[in-house]
Amino acid sequence: MSPRAQKGPSLFAAAGLDHDAPRPLADRLRPQALSEVVGQDHLLGPDGVLTRMLETRSLGSLVFWGPPGTGKTTVARLLADATALHFEQISAVFSGVADLKKVFDAARARRETGVGTLLFVDEVHRFNRAQQDSFLPVMEDGTVVLVGATTENPSFELNAALLSRARVLVFRSLDADAVGKLLSRAEEIEGKPLPLDAQAREMLIGMADGDGRASLTLAEEVWRAARKGEVFDPAKLQEIVQRRAPIYDKSQDGHYNLISALHKSVRGSDPDAALYYLARMFDAGENPLYIARRVVRMAVEDIGLADPQALVICNAAKEAYDFLGSPEGELAIAQAVIYVATAPKSNAGYVAYGAAMRAARENGSLVPPKHILNAPTKLMKQESYGRGYAYDHDQDEAFSGQDYFPEAMGRQQFYDPPERGFEREIRKRLDYWAKLRADRNKEQE
Image (cartoon, rainbow, N blue to C red; front, side):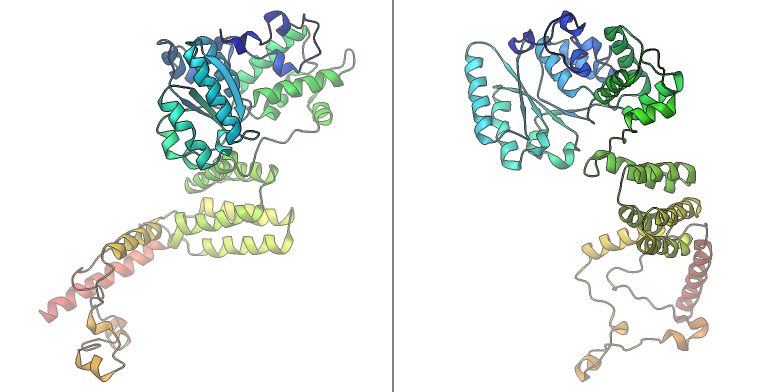
């Protein structure tokens, strides 16, 4: 066991039998063994990633990515115990270059005595690029085993060089069963049940929003508020804890996860799921105009010309919110979400634009055919600019069938409308024009 870990709370302390100053319930319930960690079976179960690593009693550098209250700090501390490493903890919020140098120097000195160091860096994403780079030499020569913890997506927030030297492990929000186990442990340590009826207990688990620490903090609030013999129902629980808002930081992954869930529900034509995620975002205080802009994007990306009115309605919803504000304007956005979720779907325009952009980058130096170029000067006329151009409005069906691509490319097809919604009509037109073009090309042969 590492020297730092030996200073941790004893089992007697966890049971509340010591005489130190009272400690928060979450601290008293901190697991003393990896087997006590709940909700991360994919990492710590019999076939978990960390379980397999520990079978060799050696660790590489790791990045723990997950929401608050899922056990990242605790697991790092227990890994140090399991591998006989000294546990050192710093926070990127309060540490600078000088602090890092002291930690690295101490780890080098410790290494000379045969003791390795597990350096746990909380909020590692808050270090800038240069600070993150400073970890590379000590990771490479084994001075420290780095375990960084972050609530942010490492792909966006951590240097590629650091990520290439560490394995990212994802910590999941605690499910209802895991939070329930924590509450049961809390009741065992407190020696009394939570004064909640069955429905209120379920509500408290939901209020924790997958955060184990938050669930224990809520439990403490309930015990403090309850009078002797009192049992709270859901209404009283809400009154007591003032309905703790779901954990949702608009700058973190909760923000991106919910907008992604909303977008995919719309794309999957499920208006009920889409409304659920929309309501969660409104309830968490998301900027409605941000959501409105994303709904406009859904209309363009996933519906397109299958229903040309989708874009009009989504823009109108944004304007309505600008005019009405909250909460009335939120209904306009909800109405737009229902519309796009139930509209026929097509990404044909989105795909066509991407294909055209790739072709433009690959063939950006090709000159358009001369017959479709204007000839405003005598020289350009002499060079055959505009010669042979057929004015489509003068042709039968107002369609000339000319080729408009550069000659070196030949005709290309980027847009392929499906047989859905309004694009069924567009396909009919394109098929008809293709037939006319083929017929007129035959006539010219």
